[in-house]
Image 1 (tube, rainbow, N blue to C red):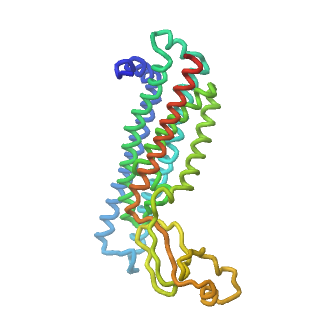
Image 2 (cartoon, rainbow, N blue to C red):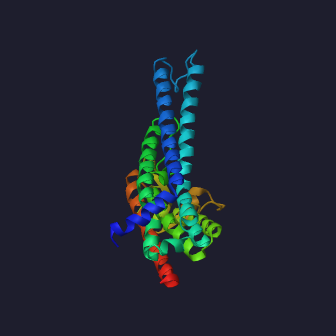
Image 3 (cartoon, one colour):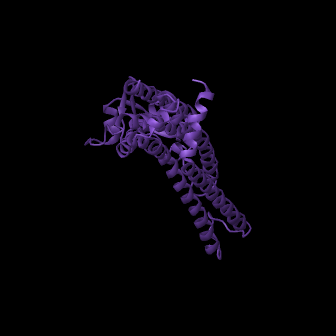
Length: 324
């Protein structure tokens, strides 16, 4: 299907929903402006604090108010970023609701799609236009927001309220994963609308599907890429790698068998005697280092894009069966 053949139907979609699209764009710009503005304010307070000669780590007489103002400002910055990350986590569901509701569901429920099909627009072209416009806007918009989130995360980690890359708020707001979730829910929203043909029902199913998808991928995320394992004598010193995400720990016997960390938790014996009884020689720690951020992101995004492609293919199949 050529791009030219989509131009007319796509223009209709943009015109029909232009107010909503402009509103969404304005809200996104306002959110970015709020984050940048808060950062500039925090940076100004930090520069002023540096000029006072006071220190957060060292208590100095007469510096109490300056330290409190400085830390309060950094805390407000971290809270603004927390709200921004929450919006990023909810954004895919909102995109899916928009497609399941106003874009496709409402037209199917009200029957207005029939007018489009009488204007030399086939059902396939109509659906392609309904998906192409929000998909392009989603790809561009969410990519920009994801980049802004990554920049804000880097600034936050220079404050006294850092956030690790593997924490849900940070991980879900940066990289390629937000784009993958957004495109996946766009496809799910379209499929729900075509299957149910009821606006509210399709929107509800889309939200439920998003929740189930998030839970499922959060459950298996640590297994999407091979973890690193450190082993050391159970009575020896060990330093956990900086910025790593721990995924498991326990004991290793002299024969190489892994035992859970709580194997001696309920034992009546002394810990050393219990471990000796299990022939334990080492401890192990499984983790994802910070360098695994992109492999995990790309694998999860690939899964999401495959699901999105499958949902789109099924949507076109449903449309052909019902309307030829």
